Length: 532
Image 1 (tube, rainbow, N blue to C red):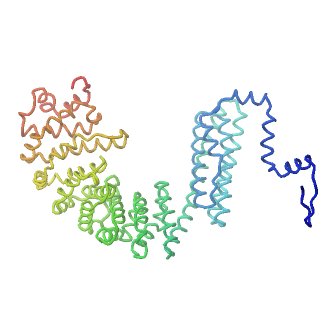
Image 2: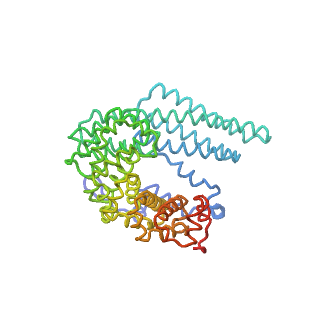
Image 3: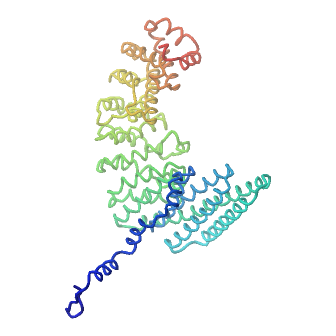
């Protein structure tokens, strides 16, 4: 029955009902159903005969073909930037292989991606600086030049002509890459400026949380973006957040972002400029702050004092606050409720002992040896080789002081060091294996330094440390074939042998003690397992 206006009904035939039903079906759905009945045998045979991938980068082509779906200018830039950077790298690889068809097709695709980036960003941001507009024109001109010259290469068969054209393509590709880098940096700088301005102007916790979160995401894109953030006032803005009580709940996120920015020299200089170290010291020494906040502050300290960064030695303001910071970090180690908190605090202390030798004397006065050795017995705080690496680093650096030996003896520390010589990885991942090697090496270094004290040396011999050192020297698998561990163990063994030579067999004396260190090293590094 079909309803008509006014409530009247008209009886319909079965044929009319079916036709009406077909009209109401979605057209795309009908098309897909019809396709099942329209396959051509010849096409199917060809498809079945084709391999899934003719090129090793075919899958990447499919991935690159999809553009970003987000309307956020920052995300558009990052995604398109990644796509274009990948395309530039791949074109360079194909150019080296002289695969001209691929070079040309990828050049055309690169032009499309570049045009899309310019168009999408202009639409999303709604305005652009004159400088950006000029660079955009240069970029698109180089894209057109690249497409044109690679197309001409397809028509050339003379090898000498192709060789000269290859150099031209390479130069064009290099210039295109430079213009792309300039445009991306200008656009990202502009977006960072907007984020920093928003942090400086906002009083809303929700806006501040979102903005600092965006800033943190940018720091994870690498050092170049961290430099841009530092230059555009990101460090000053984050320190400002950490000085406002109304934003206390955002301190951990702001500090985490700050730690990432300080991996570059510009970030550290800005931290020094705005008295950021003093702010960190205030947070660490204020017990009213949450443990999470103080742990993130410790992470920033660990970053700015990293021995792997050559420019940290110029951080003069750190020395002024060092005693307060060291005291607070020891307290955080002692009170840590989790392994992560302890790891951050101990890592900061370990780096500080490299940063300035006075820190070791401070640690002795603060009974750091007792605190660290007690923590080793608490699996809630110390449960990974990464954490034990920080502890043994501190002990190794403190062991240069004579008073450290008596503290170690008093706290039964030699037994702990003996245990660290047997550190083994649980998972077998490269990072964990490397951490175990560092623990073994630093434990041997600590033992060698402490064994200047005869009492420590005798205790080490009593605990069979010499047997373990010999095993590490003679068995490559025990030290994961690490040369650094071998050298440290040979040095420690020779130090102990000077105090208690009777604990060695003749073969050990002849091979590990009496020869020059380099000769013993060569002997042990070439030793097969069957000799053990």
